[in-house]
Length: 250
Length: 155
Image (tube, rainbow over the protein chains, first blue to last red):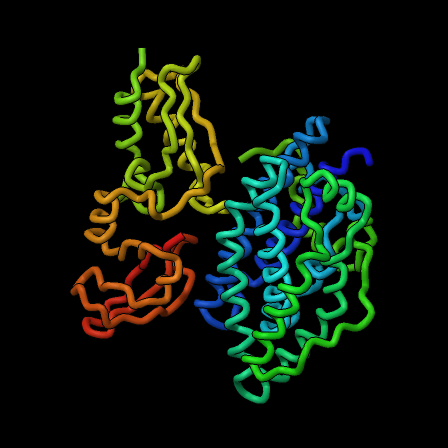
């Protein structure tokens, strides 16, 4: 498999960047200052991860593409993020439902990746997992707070989780890129993350008094560049300045 | 000719851009000074991956070295081992407290334990927001003197 390492670093970066950009949409709009700060800070951490992963992807590719080049000058079909992160924020409960599922998965992934035979991936993951642990805890707390809150907050959290169940399966899918790198001890076998993820989700849902997770047939395709319509819109917002003024500097 | 101590002295004069009460050395983000390397190298590690201060820190270190006539010293970022608040020096912790920021607890499991009010030393405090004015801090309030204050999170 050619360029598997490039593809892997790229998708890790794409996941982080798209979700970081999504969370930034909350800036100044969150229901309370506390939440505004939390979402902005999580977004910032994710964008920091993206810089590191995309920077590495560019180096591995060896065609002179920098992290910025990969972030701002790639068309939608060339993005390989998972579908969950590109979904619109919806209401606060839906945003937090997504954050809980994503960060719980990402924490397990980075815990494993910190032991990767690829030194760069390992050091990025070891650095980032400390932050992601915080994201997962914070989002888990909100799932409990809303799920175990008022009738309305509970209904909204259930709706938020229901919206995202269909995107869970993709997180655990292995394609040729992952299989190649798992064999080399570079990537994490996603199947191995599943029991821990399921247990953590079940525990939080139970504490929140919410129904158990009911996964419908998964919607997949993000890793191959087959995205929902939402990604094109978010990229348009994110990329239009650097594309309109390609050589602009601060 | 640079020696490690002279380089460190320059770095110790560079304040953190967001918490100017402490220097980069106090904060423990200067990982190594390789004075004998050709060219000599300074290794800096970021606090948080997305910390916007990282770029400013690189720039201030560059400017401070240039101003001290150490134009040949290169500044590099290293990620591993990842920064931890355990690397904040005892002097740095005291400076944080004097500046009105409760220094980080020793263990990450203690982030939820009561902070100590930097104004009146009360341990009767509560967390207002898990994220504060920067990624590295949480917002707390003292139940006794009512002062809201930043607490450095253990990381």
